[in-house]
Length: 556
Image: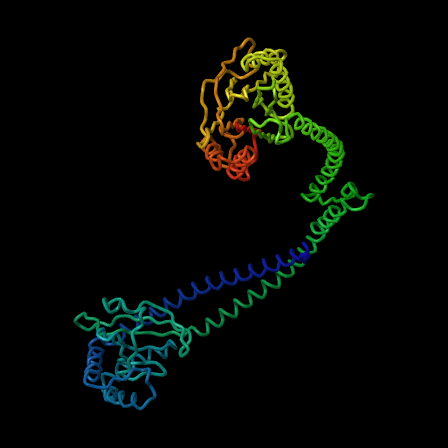
């Protein structure tokens, strides 16, 4: 496997400190700029608004109204109108020439002198404009700036000032622009009233902010640089401190961890030799690792002993599994000299050994015994109880008697000394192989399924008796049945119908019958295999919780 290059803790600390200092400097510079901007902008807004107000009250409103009307009369009389964006072109020069006579009027000269006086006194651009609502443009009426615009020059109305179209009395609230032509500029406009109290124009003031913005930028950069230098100096001090008190001890712990499973001399003693005295959580971690090393050493010692014991028990369980499997008939076809019937059975334990069992045996020349049983519980106790129950049932059946008598005998024997209170459900039948007639006793077991020749499997439902080994002196009810030529009998334990998928849904009787009827004419081994395959497909990856036992016999 290709190894990935890793960054050391020291390098990560240096990188983190650099990032933090950079972020801190950026945040500090941003906050400084914001505060600086707000403070300076507020002062400039006050100044430009006051200057605009001074302009508005210094000029004569009626005269300005007269000049505005002169400008608009000329504008309306022209067919070709050219805005300031065409300034310097022959077309613009032709357009503006029509307004030149206004500049020679005494009214214009009088108002222009006032504007120039205010402009020179404050070192700002001062002018009067008229907002033409119809076309959303602003006309210069008189301009007292150092570089002045002639009457009749017009510009588009900035969208920020559209409110003046609805209410001219609000003027232009102070606003800041940054253009390639003028740079940073703050502008405000104040309404000019005539003697009738009507707003006839706006007195405007422009103040350049280029110098203050340049100083602000220089100050911000200087502050950022100083912050970076101070941060880097402190970072170097911090990094050396971290390396001594954090990185170096952690490297020791890391080396000890890598050596923990190193050579035989170091194995299990890597942390005990560390001497870390940082007086903080790292020292606590070192002490904890020493205790953990000691606990792991003790655990490994105990685990070695437990593993050896577990292996011994596992080996014995394997032997027990083999012994249990050997106790059940496993050679098929069996009774090769018997042509009257065909048999197959299987048992899949949920654990190494199980409590389910099946059996079939010849009682005499004409009678066959069939047993399917399920001991309560699982594992070794159930397996031991199963061995006893199987032996008792078979031995008693070989002595003669009906299924009910055989189960009554086994019940009384199993009840003696049954301190574990185990019990076993049993389906036991004796069939006369010459006639197909049989007698069965069902002690709390699952209903068998029977298929008549050329038919479908169906459950044979009748009243049960209680399970074997529940109490002494019980009599077991018997049930007569008959198998004809081509009939098939299928018996099973609850591990089949109660097989559970990942959603805790049971396999159930319906799915069992569907699996049996998938290929009802198959031989007995294939029928059992069809059921087992259906169970496996149904449960998927869900674990097996119960033993699965099946016995199938076809009467010929």
